[in-house]
Amino acid sequence: MKPASGGKAYGLLFLTFFIWGSVYVGGKLISDQVPPALLACLRCTLGLIPLSMMASKYRGKVHIAREDWKWFFLVGVTGYFMTITLIQLGISLTGAAMAALINALTPVSVTIMAAIFLRERITPVKLVCLVLALAGTVIITGGAGSQGEMAGILVVGVAVFTWGIASVFMRRLTARYPAVLVTAIGTAFSLLFHIPLGVYTVATQPVDLNPLSICVVLYLAWVGSGVAQYSWTRALSLLPASTCSLFYPLQPMFSALLGALILKETFGTSFFAGLLLISLDVVLNTWETRRLARNERQA
Image 1 (tube, rainbow, N blue to C red):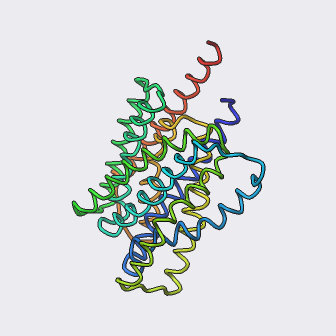
Image 2 (spheres, rainbow, N blue to C red):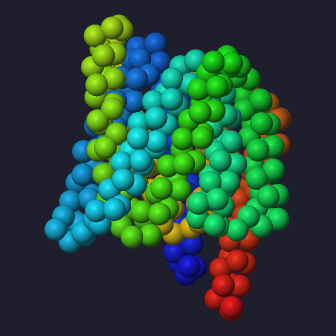
């Protein structure tokens, strides 16, 4: 990996996790107005619009091998249907900060899956990064003062597992196809499940689509499920899956900051202690990634 590519990848990761941190706050903001399953459906359905526009430049230029369609389908099912639906449900049950805390366990899931299926090496430094990441996340979300219910915690825990699997599938596909194409096709496959569940939700649960909820839905769809999903998939094409996953602690940090501004959540000195740990995690992870890349070039 060239240094320029590394810098681009890190920028994409910061953008991704800022947006994903805001998604938790937006989802909580309208959780009483739009049911989780419907919100997940609207996110992916509307988010497919900008993704399709970005992917259209590859129409007729990229041939997808027949044997790879199953991986696109699995990305859609595990990453864009199961994970997004479960995350929205978890946010409604536990709140933004607690859901972000549990979802920060994703590095453990992604790193383990990448080691098993992609044979990516887990170095001692990366193990230290995982410890720092989890410790910083616990401190930050604890400082934000959020409390969660066990049901919501379990739901988000399952989402962590499904996203870890999806990230491994994405890594396999982005080695062969443009990132935006992987994201768009995966999202399209997810609609096979989102739309029936969304229709059922509208028929059985109350929905309040007022101006606020409409604006939040559009943001979650076009930015949260469009821009962020593309930037994440693109980052996976530039860096190992286990390295990308180590940036997950930035998500609850941004979620806590936005939660304080929008949801009036409060936090104290523990937040800044967690921020210090996360900053150390990112710096250490960047150094280790560059060290490994330099060793590969010299080998």
